[in-house]
Image (cartoon, rainbow, N blue to C red; front, side, top):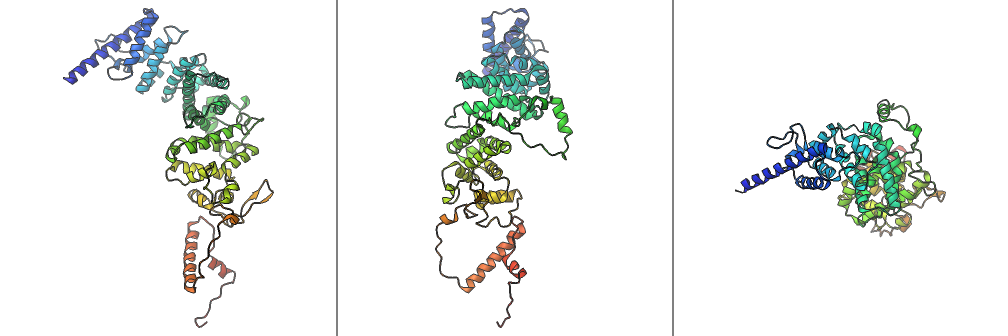
Length: 504
């Protein structure tokens, strides 16, 4: 009995959806509906379309009789016509809401809209849209980016998609600076950022055309309030963009068309050395070049406090990647500032590294956390970058206890002598070598607690300990991780070993 009732309800809904679409189709041509009637029908259709069950005329191409819709017409086409064609000067927000909802619920409808040829209209309308229209247009374009048949390069070349996105983000920056941004503005910004991320992700050869968006993205990151849980929209959307946006300076003379960019990628010679990075005035303003990296590091510092290690493992990877990208292209002054914020200081070395509650110590603990398998390598890669990609400096900065796993995993040999307490690199600020540290723990040697010596070893204990050390050195040498020589072999080679007779 319940199945019959459900079937009747579905049939009734199906008929009503088809009838609504039929009247809306007729209205596109004849303007037969008043604005209130039209809005009412679209509102009903939006409610019905929240569930695909019984809403087949919206999502399918073929609709069987007795429903009064042409078999070659789709609900997607009718909604798109209502959104753009009925009044070319005014977008129908209700129709676009229905359309966006359908594209979200049923992926195959996205290809339908691409084939109908509405993508150029969406791109062109974006510039002059208000916040609500921007939200809807960006949402629809975002969903269409998952279709390989969507020609993003043509939209950039012929329909000003890149220019319009750059313009909208610039407008959002102005509103954020003037504190005039509304909740609707925030929603529109989030959709536009998601759209841009997908374009850059699926079409990296087009990223030069979105270089003007870099400054608005950085400025919004700098100005927008950081919530108690920092890694939330829009901050996450903004940081995600920094992974794919080009951070190097780009001038009009160096910009290319999408087709030229693809050709350049295909013909690039691996023998040609890559040009050194150019400090970007957008990333590093001359008046305060550290301002944006300090903001990113501040977000990181708050995040490692606000989230558990397992949650950080899910959320913080783009942030760490962005900070590392900034370091790679930073001028020397900014690099020194980043090192001072992220690497252990002399004060940290009063005890074994990783024991304090500051950011460097939290990062070190995160680098060895079993709850953060993704972040472990990202944190260590960042710290290795901050150490000039030098193994000796890396070991000094964080201690061999934290550095060993990364060096072994990446096949980086430990230079001979780097494990000696006096092997610390020179301190640029002091112009001489730093104080000796324990190479394993990173603690200053003169701050280590004195070790209570036990009773003297017997001759038998000394022999067992020597045998154990011999085996350990042999194992270490065979791994290739460290270039070491067994002390016994070294003594023989230097003539310091004397074999005694049995009766000696």
